[in-house]
Length: 271
Image 1: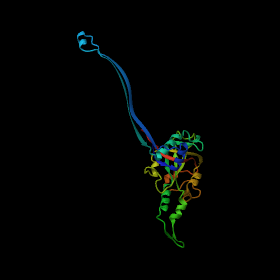
Image 2: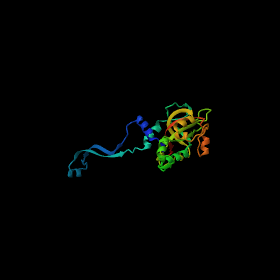
Image 3: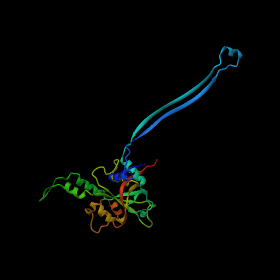
Image 4: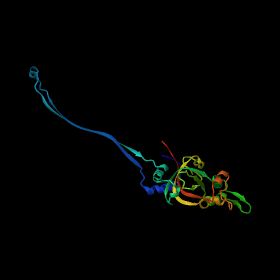
């Protein structure tokens, strides 16, 4: 069992349907009992006592008995489909990574015990503010009223959280400081599941379910998957500029990282 922090449901649904495009809606469970029996008994009441035998006649009888009885009931159980049930076969099918460098592009993988860091959380908050509708009419000299919300929406629609993951020692390739990089598309509402926030994935190790996309320069990946980087980056700077200096220092854009097309971030449960 597992707890879902994040899931790209559209992506998970498409992959799950390729595995098995039949969705179970209900099941019927029968329960009951039945009994069948038969028997035969011979009775001889011949009395050997001379005195009594004169008073009672001899009785010979044969008795045959057959019994059949059954009871049956049916329970109709409705199957509830949730995001977790769609994700479950993918989690089961995904190959657990033993060495990150051994993977081929396109592999459906599962990486356990990954520590994640969000690098551009403050940029996303600023983007949210611009897209929230608060700045729909701003007076600009020489232009008149300007709708900054509509302008921001056209530029920031593809904004994503940029997240790196520190891999456990047993998963790292030999002589390599291995990290993974992934993105979570920004949404105005319900980015995470079960009322979690984006910072919850930074609290403790998690399991990543995704598609391995190869090893690339981190700065190159960031520039291609994050539209915010072009607004918040200076020339010849190898780190993401952010208000969180600790996160900025931990992101080395000159390093190589393994890019994971993330399907879900989960916390596996122990029972």
